[in-house]
Amino acid sequence: MAGDEDSVMLLAYKFLVSGDSLDLIPGPYLARWSSLYRPYLYLYGNGPQRLRNLHEKYGPIVRIGPAHVSISDLTATKQLYGVGNRYRKSEFYDVFSPLYTGKKFETLFSTQDSVLHRRLRLAIAPRFSTMGVSRFEPGIDRAIAMFMKKMRDLKHDAISVPQWIEYFSFDLTAETMLGESLGFMETACDIKGIIGGLQPGFFYGATVGQLPWLHPWLLGSQRFLDLLRTLGLPNPTSEIINTVLTKVSSWRSSGKKDDGSLLAWLQAGERKQDINLTDDEIVGHIFNLYWFPNSPHHPELLSLQIYRLAGSGTKANTLIVVLYHLVKHHDVHRKLVEEIDEYYRANTDSEQCASGDVRHLPYLQVVIKESLRMVSAVDIILERIVPPGGSTMLGFHLPQGTNIGATANVMHHHPDVFEDPARFWPERWMKETTSSEKLQRMERAFFAFGRGSRGCIGKPLAMLSMSKFLVTLLRQFDIVWASDAPDWEIKHYFMLRTKGFLVRFKERLH
Ligand code: HEM
Image (tube, rainbow, N blue to C red; front, side, top):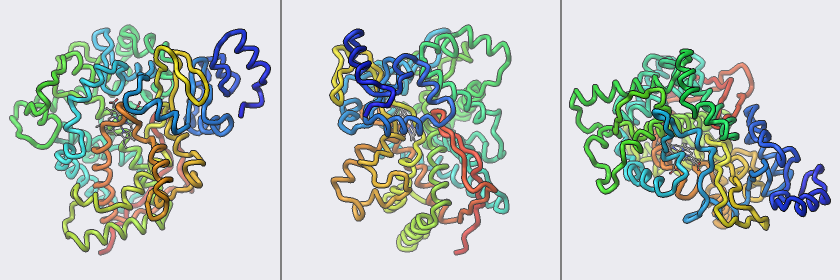
């Protein structure tokens, strides 16, 4: 199982001399000695694929750094992420904690403190439950209607899917959070460079996140941030926060009623009263607030960070991947359109797709799931730290403090779990095709939304918005590949980046 360069003698010697039990874990030679191996793994945008290659070569547990281990085994991942585990998040997540007046603020996504995490999560959990998210429907519907209108206007043009899906996703986020869009689709432009400006942030997360001790000297340092501000570098985060603050104050002065947005929900004080967030905790949700040292604390901005990063980017990425697979797999596209048409013919002639409709479209759900399996929006190692006392995994002793994690790309392409893993085949998720025992294993390996108590809180919202969008789109348009290049190019820096994915949306004749 070990690589060619790993001589058994050397391992035994090192173990005896240094007593480092990690030396017994197979992996590339350089990774044992240098922390630079991991940023190098992610540097070229193909980190997930390279990590998968390492697992194919070395097996279910691979050493990828002096104190870093990657795993792909189902029992080990259950131990690591399962309910009641004692493995906290690693320092990698520090790059997602903002500085505010020189102080680090914890967020729901980044905190390593389990007590604080519970407080933050419970505060917004009701609104993000499967039932709770249906209240976001008016905002979701408005964003979808605008996208369809725009595509009708542009029906002769080749459309850049990543560009338009990102406009859609950011407007959708604003609709659900603030009750109105930010106008990305309306103006057909990246307002104030917000979307483009986020890309360096993802690159920073993917690379500096692998060397978290560098972060306090870079974006984790108030001095460095002040320097950037003095140099007048573009700052999408400040643009977002400014825009949101303006919306919040106009919302207040207009005395708006409940429009289904998160803002209205928070204003109405429907949040569970027994969980009170301190001002600092609330501010901690406002990612990169350090650009606004004088900003007042705005409880209404709770979860902005969730929305901006996790919400908009992940939904956009996933929709891009689904559309890519639909346009490349005509049989799947045809079958999905048939399912949707048949349902609406038999049940309703409403133009809109309601949350209740989505539950009756099983093929749609497996198409989304299979797309997430093929290319996951979040494809980083979900790092955790071995608790005091150490632990044993896959027969290896892991000392306290070892950084260990799994990643969607590796889990989703496991040949022992997924038959022909490189094939896009939504039917694999259906009980008509796959035995229940096998399905259970596949479900356990499905990692797109993470796992356990730190799993994605936004999954119900993401699934509802993506399903409604796809149903409405496929009822109205056929999709045709329009790039000169035969295929797209993809890169992964924490989030997906694609090039060369153009289509034409042709109105369907009914
Ligand atoms: C298809 C869309 C999405 C995907 C693939 C996705 C993926 C993930 C993954 C893999 C994690 C686990 C991270 C970890 O363990 O380090 C996560 C956590 C999280 N996601 Fe999502 N996400 C999506 C949509 C959303 C949306 C729409 C929101 C906001 C409403 C959101 C908010 C969060 C938050 C707050 C966490 C941290 C939860 C915690 O630690 O308690 N996500 N997401």
